[in-house]
Amino acid sequence: MTIISEIRAQHLLIIDDEEDICELITNIADLCGLQSDYMAELTDLAMLKDIDQYDLIALDLSMPNIDGIEVIHFLEHFEKKPQLILMSGFEQTVIEGAKRLAQQLSIPVAGVLSKPFALQELQALLQQPQASTMPTSKPKQSSLHAQYFSIQDIESGLAAGAFIPYFQPQINLESGLLHGVEALVRWHYGCQIIMPDHFLPIIESQQLILPMTKSVIEQTLKQMISWREAGLPDIQVSINLSAAYLNQLNLPQLMTDLLQEYPVNSSHITFEITERISLESNQPTLDTITRLRLKGFYLSLDDFGTGYSSLAQLDRLPFNEIKIDKSFVMHALSSPISRVIVESSVALAKQLGVRCVAEGIESQACEQFLKDSGCDIGQGYLYSRALPSHAFQQWALEYLKKSS
Image 1 (tube, rainbow, N blue to C red):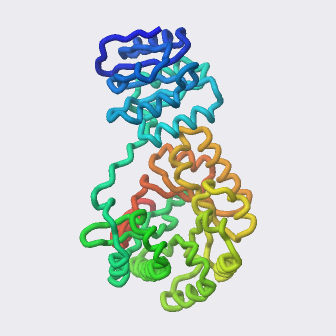
Image 2 (cartoon, rainbow, N blue to C red; image 1 turned 60 degrees about the horizontal axis):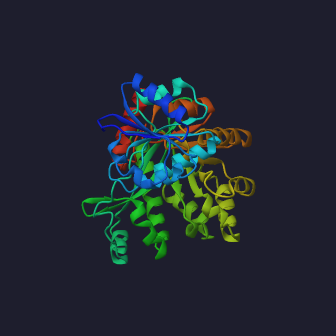
Image 3 (cartoon, rainbow, N blue to C red; image 1 turned 30 degrees about the vertical axis):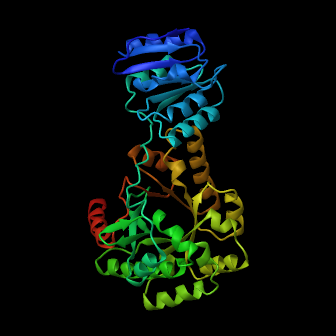
């Protein structure tokens, strides 16, 4: 049965093959001041040709003719996309999978309901559809981001010292004190700042990653000395290392030589190594990683949980730290699965006696969850975006005053 009325603002469409569920949601929607229509039978996607005129869709994932996943894909083609409330009697992993799919297609998700659901859960979602767990739509790339950079552009930038480290603060979650920073490279291209996604593939393909990384490391060491002279305490600095750099057997000696030139203690430097890199470990890489640790540098397993061999890498390589991937941290409050992954990662770090860092913290609620879980270090926009050195120094001095 299909009931359609004139469409107005704050309008709900219910799509569920159980008519009693449709009527129940209709009654709750009426109590919440929402106009509502429902479809208890969906045999053709053409029946949804006006779906973009609705503000909110309560969608059952399992229906006999056209399932909820097909509806989600159908919504992808509309410029105006209603928010979704996803419903299913299947296990939570199915609902979460559908939610992730919708988010990847830039379709906002107001919430999920596992059947049978409590009326209070439904009412809470209908009363506050705008205060949802929907993601921010991916911004369209500007013409700058779509711009092609030539090898000559990259080489000129390297020669001019235009690849600059920016620094994102890391906070000790227990004490609230400044723990350190992660050095993140940016390209100053004329008056514009180019993010690494737009130049690193070219640099890696042209085997220019070695000179760029060396430049970033040297600049970072200089800044560490400058911060010390400005009155900042010695802090931990994390630097990303590529697979190509780890294959250089002379890297440990190169770093030792640099620390002679720039007097910084090796224990204040953490090298972040992605799971993808360590998964591909060969003899030179294993040699380099082990010798770096012997020389006192800290080693962090970056993007923890996203690869196929997290536990194996912790077993075979001398890591002091795991860094939980931001995709899990950012969804920990809305996804039970992400929450369990984060909590399990923190517990594993505790049992192994290694430091645990969570990146992607954007709210105080997320920070509190990580504190309660026992995570050591936090990083994310809640504290600050990545800053150029002078701006970070000012930020850090002010932060130290507030936290003292």
